[in-house]
Image 1 (cartoon, rainbow, N blue to C red):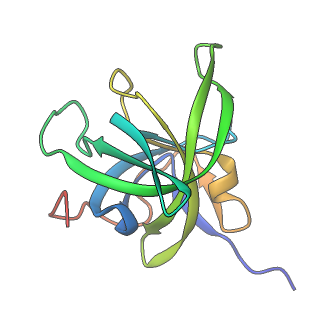
Image 2: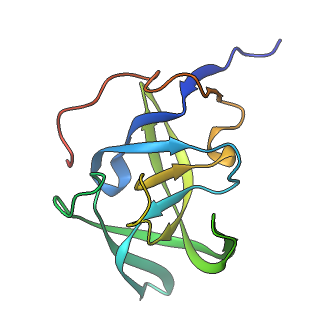
Amino acid sequence: MVAKKKVLGWREWVELPGLKVGRIKAKLDTGARTSALHAFNVKPYTKYGAAHVRFDVHPVQRKKKPSVRCRALVIDHRTITNSGGDREERLVIRTKIKIGKETFPIELTLTDRDEMGFRLLLGRQALRRRYVVDPARGFAAGKKKKTATK
């Protein structure tokens, strides 16, 4: 028996609790394979022999404040073709995402999305086996949370 998948809209409020980002508006893009998070001041470093990265996030669209300082283990480096057709080498991290009441692990590439309308893009790899996207709906998982950071 196949479990019924939850329906999400083309944009949703989500949380990234592992990065202490209390809410961020995400665009769901089934045309994109990989998910991407707007990151700046990206500084790779080594800790206990493993690659890590420290970076900042502006979780609110078109705003420079607040800024959230994040740290994560680097799990990969990938060459990604962006929406403009340009190839870019990106760091990949794994963290948890919360959509509605469900929390699960996700892989995110770090990139400069400052000029993009959404600071977080969720690709089909993050959504598969869990959700279907209804492009006629928005915010199907719930209303906006009150806090931008935790």
